[in-house]
Image 1: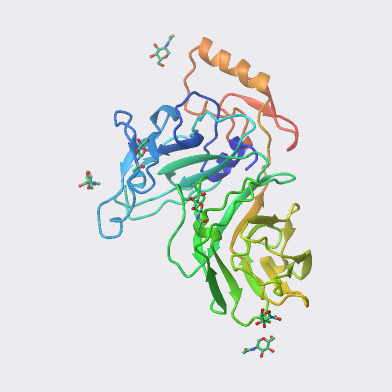
Image 2 (image 1 turned 90 degrees about the vertical axis):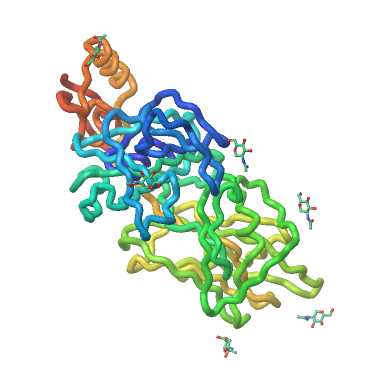
Length: 379
Ligand SMILES: *[C@@H]1O[C@H](CO)[C@@H](O)[C@H](O)[C@H]1NC(C)=O
Ligand SMILES: *[C@@H]1O[C@H](CO)[C@@H](O)[C@H](O)[C@H]1NC(C)=O
Ligand SMILES: *[C@@H]1O[C@H](CO)[C@@H](O)[C@H](O)[C@H]1NC(C)=O
Ligand SMILES: *[C@@H]1O[C@H](CO)[C@@H](O)[C@H](O)[C@H]1NC(C)=O
Ligand SMILES: *[C@@H]1O[C@H](CO)[C@@H](O)[C@H](O)[C@H]1NC(C)=O
Ligand SMILES: *[C@@H]1O[C@H](CO)[C@@H](O)[C@H](O)[C@H]1NC(C)=O
């Protein structure tokens, strides 16, 4: 989640971002209902009460489509019932204003809903459209800058899980950053819960109350608590954010202590959850998983009288961007030329040289390596 521009490029097909002015709603949240006609007023979504606005002021191309009404789409929420599709142009870019040096959680939603009557969901990917791309919703949620750090690259969400038998998804307003937490539970676990308050540790991660007041322990108290997840390839790198908080009132002679073991290696020795206080443990450096299968285990120490326990967990993979943004001076210069000569071309949106294979038509760029800003060399 380092720089917005780049994450967006990956999140949707050839969407990139430059800076424009827009109004924002809840805590700096940006919620765009893509395809909503510009003359329709902002509205509050019924479950979250978040305010969605039309995307029309932030995109030059594309058309409005409506998903079909049928039994399969009956439960699709309002923001996802209308979409913007892009029948022309190999690059279509959204221009959103974001706060510099702010980290964002970015979510894009794509609901096909047979809007075109062809019954053929499109396939499109990072930069190369294989059919008509579409988008239903774009959401940006600012996060505290010191959270979710990576040495390089950004994070892609694989899952936000809380350990409970419940079938309830937790999101805004219960989660202040609008992360979407899904309940998860294994057969060999037992759930523990509390009705008491669990203090937030004010480390910035602010797990929602409903996620931290419930936890899993192994039913057989001698067994480890094990979580396994897969990555796409064995070259992928992963980050885990583990949430702990002791939610049982321990007697003086009771101890809960365990080792945190990732892929067979102890990453945290003798950890004890804090009494009724949430804590976050994560790996500062990413790790790879043999065969793309990652295994996290909590192993009770000999001293511990109680089984290991975990309340919630977030799993990410690392993503790296092949190109940095075009030199700022060059972008200013080319935009001056564009406005002076009133040049309006559909490809002239977003970053002029990024991605390399879809730079603005009529320009050539000198793209060196990932750490050097590309320069515009001819026009
Ligand atoms: C929904 O949000 C609006 C502000 O956008 C606020 O005035 C209203 O009270 C909220 N409604 C509920 C049910 O929280
Ligand atoms: C689906 O139903 C809604 C509400 O009845 C209506 O406004 C909308 O136009 C319908 N959409 C289509 C594609 O028919
Ligand atoms: C939990 O915290 C809330 C808000 O701080 C407080 O109003 C409530 O009394 C607390 N409940 C318990 C059981 O301590
Ligand atoms: C619990 O796990 C231990 C260690 O793996 C095993 O020896 C024991 O048989 C298990 N107990 C039950 C009831 O399954
Ligand atoms: C801890 O103390 C209680 C009584 O105060 C006793 O019932 C219990 O067996 C003790 N537990 C352990 C693990 O020693
Ligand atoms: C720029 O071009 C657009 C259409 O391409 C035209 O509507 C507009 O009037 C032009 N503006 C200037 C300042 O020439």
